Image (cartoon, rainbow, N blue to C red; front, top):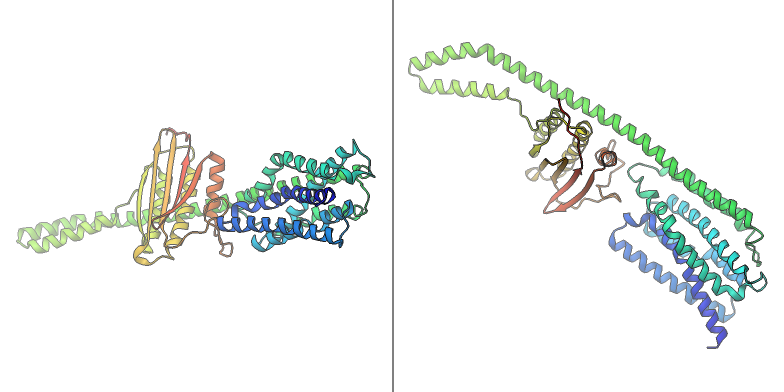
Length: 451
């Protein structure tokens, strides 16, 4: 192979290599929602596409089907270089078509800006007419600049879906996804000529970059607003649930109080009956009367789970619901009688307990069980809720159980936990082990309140 052929191979390889950072950016937003096996398959697909494009390009160049020129590389860059990777993402990362399109357009605006900078740097020591003689330098600069920019843009691409994964944003993405590509359409229309146009179209490219930044910011701020509205709705619904639970708890107390009044009213009569039975030597009848009186008194007993009244009320209601559905409940709660986060923690507890009850309804009746543990250590609170689970629980990108949007009201528990964690700087993680699914929460520096 002569020196010219080596240059063709090297330049083609370097050009295709310079496209890989863009491939990485299009993969990054979806990385956390992919299972390890799917990630491996996707990366293997990327590697196959890279070498297939390299082999096909060299074959077309050496066979004379395509001319080895800057114009060919430009057309490949604009229309074909991204396409196999994009189609692979569409097939393997579903159902996120609108998000794929938005990320493609945003990444293309960034790539256009980086490419323009690289071309302008090459033109500082060459002319437009001999630019292709320095094509390898352009590719190397393009790759270097892209890798330099990656740490700056990576947080946006990594968080744009993960941060807002707890809310339904499908309609939002459907409306906004074409904007970056529509902005690119004008630039692409005037960029397909064989000439080097970076210096002549510098101002439009700058405007394109500014528009891309504004679109990205608009998408982020729009999603932030949707998240805030969802948080407000979630809190209102949680408070409504809390009011209902307190109402049910109050009704339970009233029922027990009414029974206690009856017991007190009958106490004198029962005591007289007991004395008469004992005086007549009817020990068995006296014992039955004592047992009946003991049962009446037990029926008025209020079961307490925590010294904190809000936590205690929440647990009382949901423990009762769980037991009505034949779910065994074990609760060990050691929390302060009053602390700063008690209202929000009781809301989280209500939602997570309700989710656990719904999950246990899918388990065999004899295996249903829920365990709660809460304790303080210093200024921190450690809380866990566990429920039996015979099948693996699918997790979302945030590490919490994936919500089923088709069920009305489903997912409030996990979203309330996310909001609580953000508000109080809490940490949480999930665990699936030995037939139990657990959510563990650590709340640091909880301020106690004196009453």
